[in-house]
Image 1 (cartoon, one colour):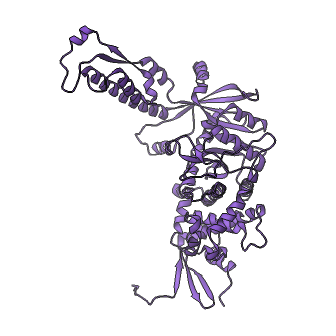
Image 2 (cartoon, rainbow, N blue to C red; image 1 turned 90 degrees about the vertical axis):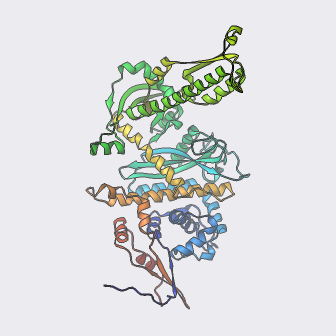
Image 3 (tube, rainbow, N blue to C red; image 1 turned 120 degrees about the vertical axis):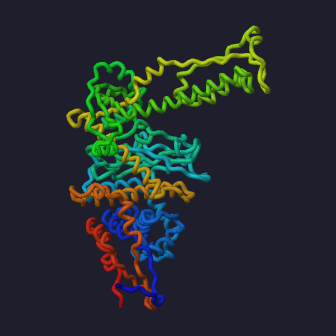
Length: 579
């Protein structure tokens, strides 16, 4: 039986090296510092290159997000100053800010260069990209923020130092953003396969611009900087337009978009009787689980029907041959009907209460007051269109026949009535659960079932956006210069690529027969495995002596699977041996 005892105080300190054991070798393999230096070489008098400074900042965001003014403290606590060879006193917000200024002038070129390097080095094709924009919120005053000329100019595509930062301004309200909040939009292009998502390129647009502008600018930048020979661009309905399809077609590329149902409802109604429906092979993770477990819970599914169609781009007058893939979802049908019925019940209860109030002669039941109350009740609820109402004046005889009003009430002067349009409800129910995808991908390249499965991978883009604003902490942003704000957002796109590349590399190393949980290991899990890993630092009269601690079995296994050297080997290569 081993014994434990208390010893004397050691003349050494520990730093939480942690996930740097993983992050540092990955950034090296991605060639991050060298790519940055290639585009923004430092002044010959500078002590450290922009690549060194900014790769350190990327590591800080991946290891523990912190404000620029605290990066030096983080480096001292984590040992990053040792790994990067930059003294803590040299890691300050002024130096970081100057590197961000330099990065801004080549931000698109650097991001594209990294995407191309990752594509070659890690075998990731760029021929199929999901595009999804998200908003980034800001607080405080940004007096320097101003509208900018768009990416697409008459003579050329603006980027890098030829394009101002996105305008931090009031944008349209969403579920997680109040109306009028200051924002910019960041769009990300993500490759998705069985190993999960990998964001590779992106762009920012002004806070008051929409998805049509965002996807047009993003494609222009892809065409300029990536110079792809093959591309299928997959995106949501906010980006859909005939103009978007036409742009891709002119470059011999393809599109797959969800489309606003209202634009394709007439086509659906004309062709509905002749559509040939087939059950889609795609099932959600939950539906797979229900089938595997023989669960008694409802088994939902999708059905697909294809209709050839021709669109016309109003601007270029170009005719676009495409396929409309009509989709029916049993789950969506149930959800829509449940939500609609909830609205209907709430509106009916409100109208009935108002009807009783008018009949009783209570307060705020004059015609103008009732109108105001109905408008407030209806709001923007879609189910309001099923109801009609009116205030009918009572005749003298009808008023005389009324019972004596209750205390606090006055004799009623009007009758409130409302009706419900059952036929309109049934017409809407006939379209519940239906949606439309539009694609220019030829049938010979991919059928509807394959394309629908690819489109459903768009959910991964939303997951990427959540990570962008979550673990990488794109917010809060404590920078006053819009140029530095934009540079930081682009730098975080590089950090996001690093984040998802790590889990991709690990998943690729797992044997096909491994447990499902192991094959779905995430970056968060990998980084957490190193959370407690420390370096020991002994201070001597000659300087600091750094000693790596022993790796756990799990930590060693992770490094071996990823093909990364141990911290001991990294430090041995970078630091001289103790005298």
